[in-house]
Figure 1 (tube, rainbow, N blue to C red):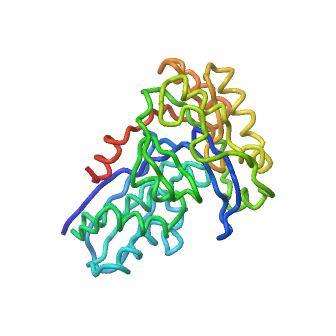
Figure 2: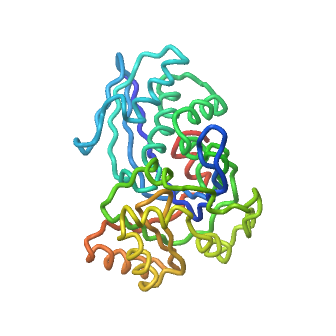
Length: 293
């Protein structure tokens, strides 16, 4: 029996601009995203059929789970023996961190190795794009420029090491519900490549990107008012910049020193929120952990 274990890292959106609506009904976005150290873990082993177990137990372990869908998608293009998969969740659901999409990408890569399919990264990206808008991002990792409906992903130079504090208010927000309230392009004049500093990553650029903001933040605050308070508290705790990630509800802050970020984590947890000290995970490290190197 063959076994394989890998990590499925979360991401943050350093900024996110909604620049239009596509003919297919999706919204056109422009964003820079970054994989971070917070991650889920998948244990995979060969079996007959698909068996999925999820910890904690209250999370779905059926065909609605993107891990199941990713395994079924691979079986749809290539004969394989099947797999037993244990997904251990740490990335909050409905937080804008891409946890489900990252799990799906890790499943594609992990089963490709486990079953020795050797499909190649191009074919895996096609399958990833069918599974969900965020999934292709997690086949590349590191710092990436994301466009279109989220499936157009271009690598950028890795970010400099920076402590990050990630805070989740305990509220899950549906991406579908947030985008349903976008009535028109929120950034109507944004053009691809017009973002300041794109492709020239420096500490100053990083703060500049975050201060560009997230067009979905004001909508998400309607579902979870704590987003605004968390952002304000991170800035008062010494963050040089802070923003909501994705469609919410998680918020992150950039810090200059690990000691400052640790104190901020303690402060956020005293308020009753979940908080983590994280760091960016660069492309080479990320892809090595995912088994793409």
